[in-house]
Image 1 (cartoon, rainbow, N blue to C red):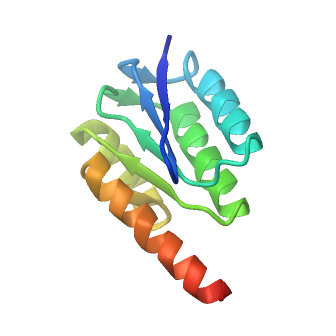
Image 2 (cartoon, rainbow, N blue to C red; image 1 turned 135 degrees about the vertical axis):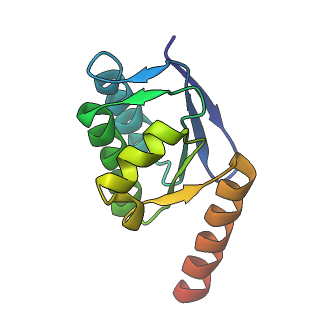
Length: 123
């Protein structure tokens, strides 16, 4: 199995267990993301701490996750980036678009803050 998926109270944590997020893994990650989103989940944390290499199809999967969460009025957070993946995201200027956390705990905090903003805006 390439992913570990844990449903939490207000988000789903997806850990990519492969060292490469490339054309072999990205399509199945996109499928998982669409399934999770289809079940009504709007907040997703994608943990890439095991990933040492990411290509354009991996970036595409990350952007799919971001778009699904945005469309559902939720929050997408990327965490566990190693140097090579972090550099790729920075070079692609996706660091200006994505929520990036250094730990799962920090990612949870980002989701909590965004949830509070949304609920206070809706009241």
